[in-house]
Image 1 (spheres, rainbow, N blue to C red):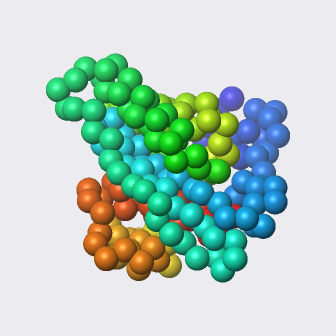
Image 2 (image 1 turned 120 degrees about the vertical axis):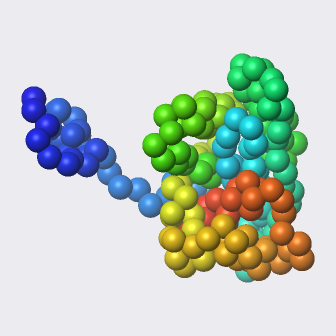
Length: 193
C-alpha cells in the first residue's frame, strides 16, 4: 500500500482494516464525584521525574496539594540503574500516598531521536508503576495541560508555574519545573473528572 499523503492515525487504522479509535475526553471514574479524590500527576524522564499529588474535594471542587517532589536517580548511573531507581521510588510514592487516578504527561523530544528514546523509557517506567497500582491513567499532551491550567496551549513554563501556584494556593513555586509540570498534569486531570 502506497502512502501518498499526510494521514492521521485514525486514517491509517481504517486503511489497514482496524476500527477507528474513539476520541475520549477523559477516563470514566465511577462514582468519583461523590467523594474527595486523590490524583497524581507525573512528568516522566530518566534524569528527573517530577510528581505531584493533589486532592479534589467533592464538597466544593477545591484543590489542595498533598505532596510533591522530584526523583533524581543520578546522572552518572547507567540507564538500567537509573530506571530501576525511578521504578523503586515511584512505587514507594504511590503506595504511601494512595492516589485514586493518575495523569501522565506525554513526552515531546523534537527531532533528537536519542532523547526521544530515553524519554520513552522513563515514560514506560512511570506507566508500569501506575499500572501495577491498578490506577486509571489519563495521558495528556503538554499543550493540553497548558491549555487546561492557563487557558492557552502555548503558555510559557513560567505562566504554567504561576497558575499552578494560584490554583493550589501555594506561596512558593516548587522547583525544579518538572514538579510544577506534574502538578499541572494533576490539575488537568481534576478538571476532567
